[in-house]
Length: 101
Image 1 (cartoon, one colour):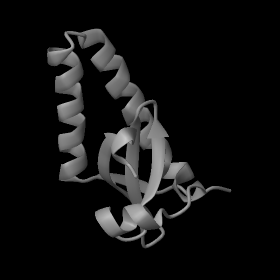
Image 2: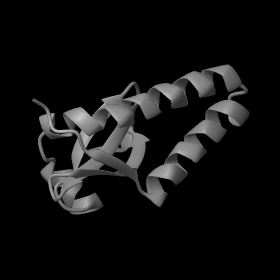
Image 3: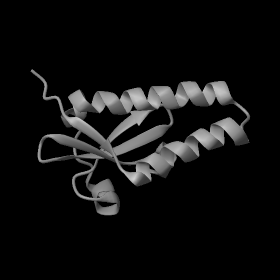
């Protein structure tokens, strides 16, 4: 049986979501694409409640973004998160995969 965890999104990750939505919606003039993309991204984040521990800790990312950071990809984006007290998943950032070293 998989562990069910609460998923918390930090202010920085929320800001990343809003910025991504704005960029797709306004700069690329694609509101329907923005809606679909953000909805899919949120679904992927929601799924972390059950599958967060399937990803390994990324040492390089942990040095830059905090302790024991794991990475889940969604299309061109990387969702950076950690598991706290084995019961909560904290999404720290949502950034372009191109920015992840």
